[in-house]
View 1 (spheres, helix red, strand yellow):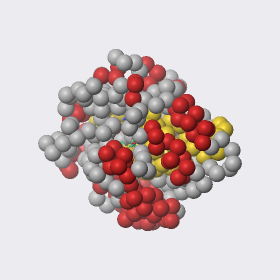
View 2 (cartoon, helix red, strand yellow):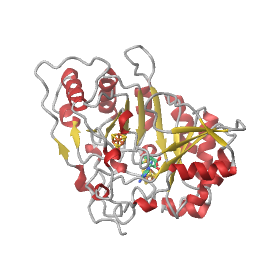
View 3 (cartoon, protein in one colour):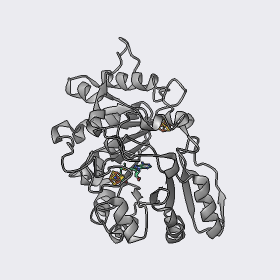
View 4 (spheres, protein in one colour):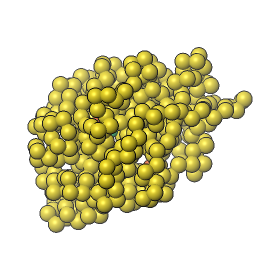
Length: 367
Ligand code: SAM
Ligand code: SF4
Ligand code: SF4
C-alpha cells in the first residue's frame, strides 16, 4: 500500500489550552489523569530534523527536499525547555528523555543536557535524564554528553547487515559508524546502554537473531519494538508487524531465555534474560499488547506543544503561554489541567480503521 498523501506539516495544528481554573492549586507533585495515571515521564523533542530517512518514520516521499521543517524561531529555546521541564518536575516528572527527529543534530544540545541535569525532584533527587539517538553522531559526542550530565542513552539500530541498515535509514549510512558510536557511549560511561530495533516483516526480521548474538554478553539491553502506525505517512499495515511473541520464540530457538520481573509498574518493555546469565533483552509490544493502562508519559513537541499520547491529533500550545508572558504558576496550572483532562488509550483502541486517521508524526513529537 502506498503512503497516504497527507502533508505531515498540516498535522501540526494546536488545540487550544483548556481554560485554567481561577484558583488553580499549585503542583502537588502527583497529578492524575482521568484514568488515575500519574504524570511521571516527559519526552522532549528538540528538533524535527533528522539526517536519516528511516522508511518507517520519515519516508523520503514525504520528508523530501521540499518538506517545510520548522524555522529556528519556532523552536523552543533551551531556556524555555528548561523552564517547562522544571514545572513538569513539580508535577511529579522524574524521568526526562530528549528525542526528535535526531536530537544530536540540534546545535549545542549538550548545553540543554547541562541545564536539565541540574533539576531535582521535590524530594531532592536528580532526574533520570536520558536521550534517544540514531547513533550517527555519537562517536563524536558521547564524551561531551556525559560530561554535561547525561547518565545513560538509547541508540536505535535496526540491523547489523550493512546493506539492510543502509536501505532502512535510506541515506546510505554505514552500520559501522553507529557501532562505533555505541562503543564510544559505552567507553564514556553512558550505561546501561539500550539498543532499540524496530522489527518490520520482510525487511529486517532475519536480523533478530544476529542482533541478539551481537549484543548478548556486552551489558547492553537490546529491545525489540513492534512496528507502529505512528503518524500518517509510513503506510502501516498489521501484516508488517512482527509480534513480540514471535520475536521471543525466534530468540529462544537460538538462546534459551526466561521472563524477568518488571522494574516498576507500568514499565513499557517486557523484560527477559538469557538463562546462561549473558544479559537481558526487552520486548516492546505496543501493537499486540497495549500498555495504555500504565502510560505515564507526556510529550513536548519541538515548538512547545504538549501531547498526552503518541497517537494524538493535536497538542496544547505551551509556547503561547511562555511567549505571552505567563508566570510559572499559570503555566504549571495549564500543564496540570491538560494532564487532569487526559483520557487517551489509543493502542487499546487500535484497528485497521484507526491506522489511517490523522495523527501527529513521530519525528515531530519524538518517540
Ligand atoms: N532519531 C532518534 C532515533 O532514531 O533514535 C530519536 C527519535 S526516533 C522517532 C525514536 C524511536 O522511535 C526510535 O527508536 C525509532 O526506531 C522509533 N520509531 C520511529 N518510527 C517508528 C514506528 N513506526 N514504529 C515503531 N518505532 C518507531
Ligand atoms: Fe530519524 Fe529517528 Fe525517525 Fe530514523 S527513527 S528517521 S533516525 S527520527
Ligand atoms: Fe500511552 Fe497513547 Fe501509547 Fe497508549 S497509545 S501507551 S496512551 S502514548
